[in-house]
Image (cartoon, rainbow, N blue to C red; front, top):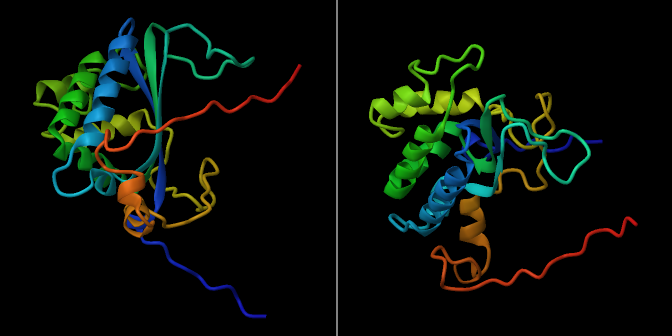
Length: 223
């Protein structure tokens, strides 16, 4: 019996998990969500050098805001919790390629950079063990030194401080701190757009060219 073929998936074609728990100043959740929506809109509508989705390589993402001291609603276990005295913004995405390349792709979109800089002003890193709230990789320092684009490495390090996701562990890899799988290893956003028939018509890069309707699916009947 012959051994199965080994297919090497290049780093640029691998999928990774971002899972951030960002500490915010208490009472700033609504502003943080408005800011996040503006960043999402800017990222989706920026047409500079082709389809921006191919550059940023984001497959899916979710953003969840939770107030200090409140349990995650709708489930009987604690779920996400904030650091005492702070609200928390939870951000999860699946992205293609290296962590720094993924983040820096957004630096080419001015409105996104503005949104990320505004997020720095909403963060609160005070009182967190092992974290210097004014250190060289702190939100305060990055903001004072000109923002995320001018201090890219410090910004990457700040994000990694609150990132449960491991940028070394890719989907389908084994032996990491969590299981992260994929049915189609190496299938990047760019490959989907370039190879799926009529992708530019079914999912145009500029919102507004088509509209989508999402009927509600049903929950299991657990009564």
